[in-house]
Length: 217
Image (cartoon, rainbow, N blue to C red; front, side, top):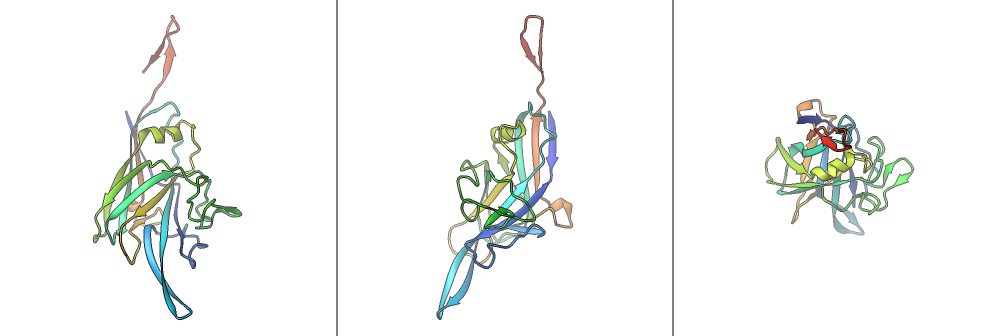
């Protein structure tokens, strides 16, 4: 049994439904928002309130895990910088080869657009949830973690699915004035606060005996 830990090879967040920020890149930011936040502007004398969304993008280099390994458990941990309201974080697998220094709410890399702004298209992300966790609001500076489906991580480590990392979205009911969950990124000066993926696996090898029977060990 092997327990391996991984910090991100790339992490950022993108914004959509947020006209001033959809084209912005936040690859060098020390925190990333995941969830809804509201902003207002005046048009024709009318105050308009829009629910913008922030979406986390994370990628981990899992190439050190043997393709044949049997994934027993996977856990993703964040350190919350700001947690304003209770909600849920959920993770899906990304289908696009996004670039940390280029991704925005409109594009995943220079010259390449998301199918739908905010990486919402069927060609942008899978609709299968890899993992999720609920959390309380009103507190800051604490860890939260979630278990990820071992079979879906196995598809990445085995090469059955290209490793384009994960999309992390936040969901919350009701009005809120700030992102639902703000976590530290690998750009934070304190590496203890970086996102952390822990994978537990068994190395699996096969050998044929004289009868041609495969023995697994």
